[in-house]
Length: 429
Image 1 (cartoon, rainbow, N blue to C red):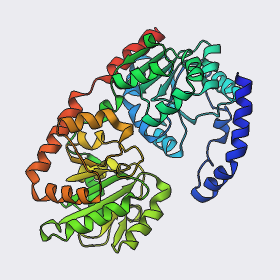
Image 2 (image 1 turned 180 degrees about the vertical axis):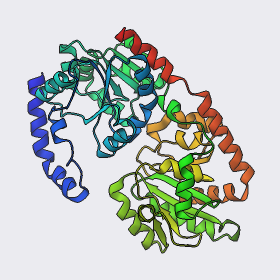
Image 3 (image 1 turned 60 degrees about the horizontal axis):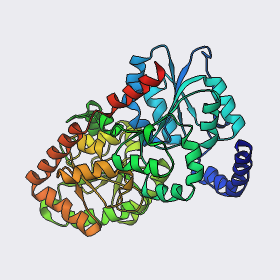
Image 4 (image 1 turned 180 degrees about the horizontal axis):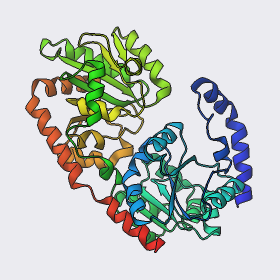
């Protein structure tokens, strides 16, 4: 089976090589970590067993924060190795864990690259965030008697439809997985329906609730506010935005500030992907707005004096939560367009009035919890977005109640880390 997969992977790489080449040239992607992707991973202490955690991108890395902290305490005799797939995931992992742990790019799923990676890392256990299960990876783990656990498990609607078509294959893969720890009963049911053993599927809740830090203020936010000269300003922050979304937000904002009572609110846009920073700058300019790029302000440590209708473009990595901390109203992006949404728990945990669009299939459980408890607001289009912006500005008590409810809902849903750690301990002890 694994040799057949190797051939399939090679053919697939040949077919998609023009797309890969385009992304390398146009978006500066896939240039890092080739040695890692070929299974060569530096490990200065090969005699020491490791806990291999795989988190595809930024969202999964963030979700792993609390569990990594607990694993450090519980298993000091094991080193932690954290792999990612994307450049942004790698940069985020390096920022949070680079000084203490081994950060590397996940190897290609060829049998020989996986064999080399397992030999270099010598894992005692492999922990996969959400659902990143590769056949040769799982096969290599089985051959070396290394348990594999899916953490924070979920299956989107689209993935579920696809996996059902290849249930015979997924059943073989899941037979080699020790445990699947799911966010919800619905996701647990989906894993069973695509071939997982129901005795190996456990509902532990979402780890992202635990990583959403309950706070009313972030210390570093004061420095950001001072740099941009926005201390005490009323901010609407659109965070984690995706393709075609910024134009909708800008048009809604234009309508909002046409009301004299709303003109004291300023808009901040923070795109999800760094390769879109320049594109979004162009969109803001096309829409007729003046704007400041935070990257330029950050270099100079000071901003020019501007009016409140000058858009702030958050074109740096790692500063979104600071912007959120300063906001009165937060719109969580990739949700007005069918991209699955971004993390709304982080915004709600900060006690902010949180708004998102209808396309949030990657965050179904927290969306349902927040909406049922009146802890967030869903809008379906630009018209509703501008209406809600106005309502939240003109009726501050309404916005404050939404924010208060949302923060409490995050608190009430925390605890998945402890349940997850309990299951991991059983396999390692």
